[in-house]
Length: 300
Image (cartoon, rainbow, N blue to C red; front, side, top):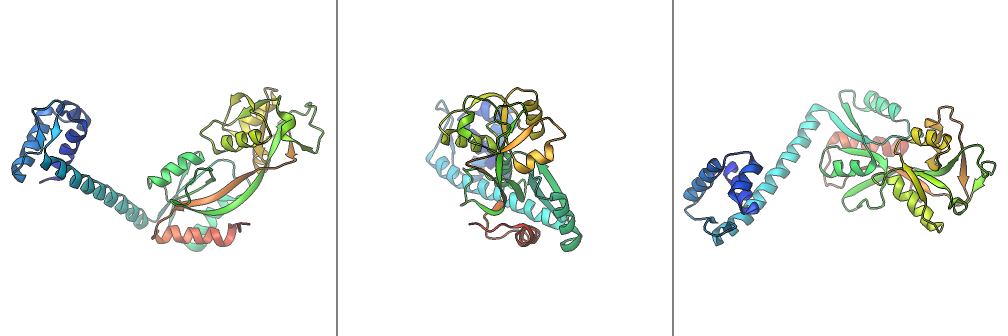
């Protein structure tokens, strides 16, 4: 009995059709049928009822399917674990990061860790939105993420190390009637046109929740994930927007835009995140402890 035969059987069992299964597996229908016939011959039992339409499993086939599911799951897990160790042997730490971490000196962090702690290692960096980074963590595509924390992030599945709680600001054109105020009540902006990040961006959820808490649903005229482009759109007069304090400082390249604090501030929570596992690679643990010691933020 070969793994390939098990995979072929699973495809037929789940699609209930030889033709569909063959297309999924990119093999000919005859080759698929031959392999399953050989599997049944080796086992001495019939696994499929070929007379029924769609194809169904025999009692033996149902038992084989249950066991095969576990085998395939164990093999997939084994492959992931071996990839995990392969990365360790290569000395590469796979880190996902978001754009707009102005107050967090990532370049210095990576350089100092590499120089002071682990000179033989390498960083592999991926830049994505936070929700995508959560997905990549769950799929073992990266080891650690430094990101804005989504409300839906499961602390059962992931471990968090808080790094920043940074207030959001309002961005306005200088000619705006409220531009001279030191602080602005978000409720007073309910008739304004807003420039929001897309729904895939954690900031969208944060902005929307803040507006709804202030008693209104914002009138969104356009969506833009790039902080620098949102600044430019505000300067053009298209609308107003919200941005983190460091984001405004980092991305505002002499644009004619002002930022103002909110009377009831809300915050961007930046954290380092990893899978909640019993055992991480030594490299992941070293980096985690280095960040905890030098940049970690105590929770209130």
